[in-house]
Image 1 (cartoon, rainbow, N blue to C red):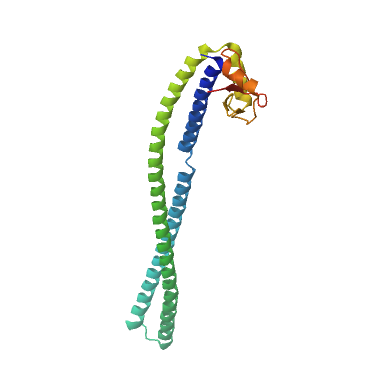
Image 2: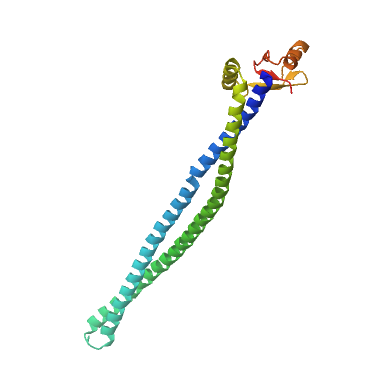
Length: 234
């Protein structure tokens, strides 16, 4: 097997390894990223806090209305019991009952407002809980799919690493060193195919002698005169 062919095979395997590794990293980040879930939980926590606050306000309003009604009942009971005979005291008592009833109307308005606000908070709480449930269900399905893909990719990576180790003994140390250097300096692509007389990586046109050198040599490595990559004619 020629050196360029071995390097080309190594390049193919390494490109697949790179692709697999990159995909695994994306999957890892996706699985570890719970920002959407945390946002949904935070919205639910806010809705729960708001619901509790409006519930306390409503209960307080209900208690104040109930307390005011008791005061009115007590004053009316005293007024109609006949225990108060003095006209001035009767008038004062009547005025007090009227004042209590006016204040009751105000308290009932506040109670109604508190009830409506609490209902809105209740709907918001239900919506936040439903949104969280949707996010959880979607992430559960997504993570299940990603976990399965992750397992398959890990197997592919083991297979590719084995293929890579099988290729390396056929290469001289100088060729491997050059290959590694080009991989680092040429964004992972050290070997380029010759297509229609050009370097497939950079598009530079090769002279007939350069093309012949790529095709005929089994031991020598021919490099692109423009980008410096190792050339291989399939």
